[in-house]
Amino acid sequence: MFSRIIVLLVLLNLLTIGFFIWKTYFQHEPLLFPKNEEYKDVTAILQRELQLSPQQVTQFNTIRERFFEKEVVLKQIIKAEKDSMNVAMFNKVTDDALIQFLAIKISQNEYQMELLRYEQAKELKSVCSPKQQEQFEHLVIEIRDYFRPDNQPKKR
Image 1 (spheres, rainbow, N blue to C red):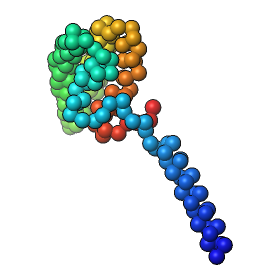
Image 2 (image 1 turned 90 degrees about the vertical axis):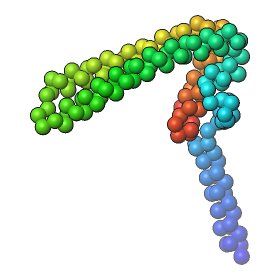
Image 3 (image 1 turned 90 degrees about the horizontal axis):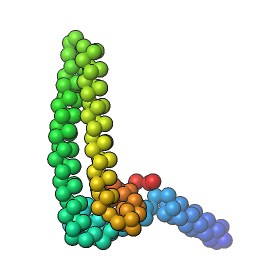
Image 4 (image 1 turned 180 degrees about the horizontal axis):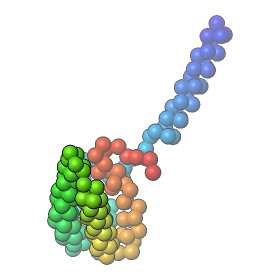
């Protein structure tokens, strides 16, 4: 009888310890904003969290639209270059110089994409007040996790 009680208490202790380990290492803190239709657009999230004025929202939208247009063009160029590289790589006779040239072009366009993102970030920051910039800094990771395709926040 006592041995069953001891085994039961040991199992309860192990389950409790397991629960706390799971909670500590596998549970993530909740997002700052709920997942619903209202917040599918990042501008709506930023408007709420940074308390953007209507003028700031308009500026944010303009900046993001300009970025999107440039991003689409660069993505199409990169995709076409990657397709060309794939075709060249699997030809009967592979031209190493061509492959290297295409790889360089792809990397240069990827570099341009990152510079474009940096320019957008600078423009967005210029619209914000110092207090908003500080809040924005803390939201960046949260927003990235929110829009992650698998909708699962990742450990930082």
